[in-house]
Amino acid sequence: MALPTDLTPRTSDTTGQHDAPMIDAPGLNYYVFALFFIFGGITSLNDVIIPKLKELFTLSYLEASLVQFCFFIAYAVVGIPGARLVKRIGYMRGAVAGLMTMMAGCLLFIPASKSALFPVFLFAYFILATGVVLVQIVANPLISLLGPVRTTHSRLTFAQAFNSLGTTVFPYFGSLLILGGLATVSAAQLSGAELDQYRTAETQAIVSGYLGLATALAIVAGVVWLFRNRLQGEQHGSTSLAEGLALLRRRRFGFGALCIFLYVGAEVSIGSFIVNYLMQSHVMGLAEQDAGKLISFYWGGALVGRFIGSAVLRHVSPGKVLATNALGAIALILISANSTGTVSGYALLAVGLMNSIMFPTIFSLACEKLGSHAADGSGIINVAIAGGAIIPAIYGATADAIGLAMALVIPAVCYAIIAGFGWYARYPAK
Image (cartoon, rainbow, N blue to C red; front, side, top):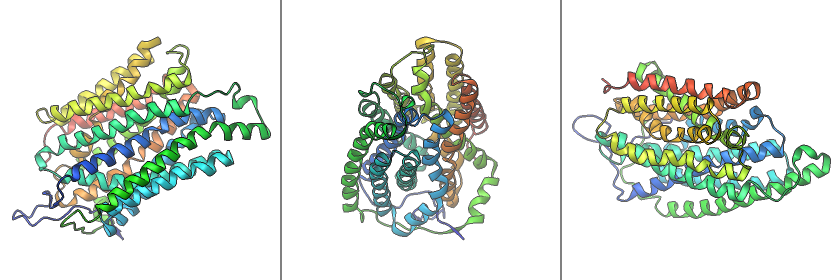
């Protein structure tokens, strides 16, 4: 069985290395940045939807975490088949396929609302995430290859800043559209046909939001299709599944893949329940919509940090920066869990700033010096993003048992392991 993640364009340089791009597409960076913006924004909308669905379907924290589970499990299910598709049809057509799949996922919210059934919403999220995975399979290798190797850390961080721009903008406007509302009752007070009618009415805002996104995605897909032949010299090789998975035996890469799993899980865990956290009377006691607006501070911190980090990483060891940020995240979690009021709320929101450089830095440190196996490593790391499905479920179950504040020990442990990787990888790979 072939592992279809060898998506690196081959070069013909005299060194025999495969780490120099061979893509003649001036201005392609801008299109790739746009893709980062889109899939980042759609992913962060989950943080707004979760508290809404939790109330409508009277869910526990564990049950509410199924939204993230169905979204992020797509990385494990679709990652390798999706890479095979991109390998067959090319980067730009692969991006169009991803955008159209995302559009289909958005449209599925119409039958989900009419049925007033939580499992139908979960299915819509899985299809939406399938498209996101396809777009990310295209975007990550491209941005790594569109420039010199020596600035890979910085360039990936800069591209992730556009991802963060999407995650900052989407939740704010999503909270205005979706959270709050005019309902004077809650789902817990209703039953039978009245409950179904209430759920259908209250989810119309969700449907309207995703219909708008579906329209935007169709337009973007059309534009990308017009440039489907813009890449020159695009070639893809193949690697056996055993050869690809053998990379996990390399200590640096295996450790890095684990940290991607833990990082995405920690980031998503905090983002998923931060609205409920801020609504607690001993934290900030905010209304649902007001708490939802503050999600933008969490993701906005990552946006600011990535622009700063793209400059810092040119001069400071990426491993040391990663370790410092991970320890900073732990400190902020401890402050939040052991305080009350605005200090507690804003300390947890500030974790977003610490998250800023983590994904691109872990990614580039793990894949450093993989040579012709770099694309295989990228594919495996895409699968590791499924940590966003597993860790939030653990966090949700823990929160049901001991509360949201005490459950923050789960992401804190994740950041501690990431700090260890940063220190381990503080020197260039051999």
